[in-house]
Image (cartoon, rainbow, N blue to C red; front, side, top):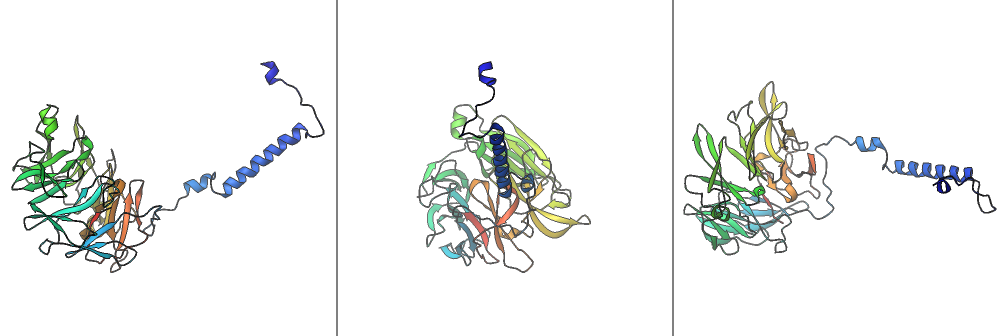
Length: 395
């Protein structure tokens, strides 16, 4: 070891500088390198900690093409573009203005390309199940239907109510692929949607429990019931009106809603248990009825500002976070147009329309879980008409 560590002084020679000169050169070189990095903003601590506060003018500059945001005006689909939207598919003339159009999931690689599994939308007009591909000229009939519950757990299929029965249908033809996908469902329950994070697509159901409350339950798939792994129906408790299903969350209003004491209840469901927690609004705000969205462990819900303890009409969106007791206000969502709805996008993102100032042209913005503190203005910016409603991010 001494032979390796204690080698003594190196011999000098005509082609070698003295040791102290070479050491000084190394120090100078390191100093110059650090100076260059600091000028480039790579090592300066102040640069990492001095990000500007999020504002309503933050703009999303995508590194790849944006997904196709689709809105509806009357019986016409509108496809987002740079400025004036392009006209899309025509809808049935008797489709009510507030009729839900439910996005479906196509297997990746099928046309139209589904960036997050989203594809065409399904709706019901005058007892007829219709499929709308936003970029095609017209809708297509898929046979009779009473309501569309949600996309099924399998790509290219949907859960549809027909004659009081819940069936799984093929969205290409309307043919029934499973006449009883959830054997615990019957007419006493309302089918709300699928709880995807359980790994089996459990069906979320509610039924009236009096005084504006509902019994919340899960119906398990035929395969799990037949093997004895799960019961047909698993009741989870009594809750208020349902807002949204986000991953393994069922989000409902509390019993004090609407009102300044309104609280959100988040029911977290796994294969082993269901936990209910109350979530308060951001300080100085209250929860209000309106559209909600989110497909990951963060969901967006509408809130209204309080002045002297009373709602003053100023609307925004707040996010619910895992384990949080309070919702967090999202910058860039002030004056959100709730009547325009919210649209789920790829990776748990949410698209919305805001009115920058009263009377100004609405702006489209996007919120993403990767930058949860604010919603960013889209670039290029689509100019949707003031009376349009968001439908989907359809590939």
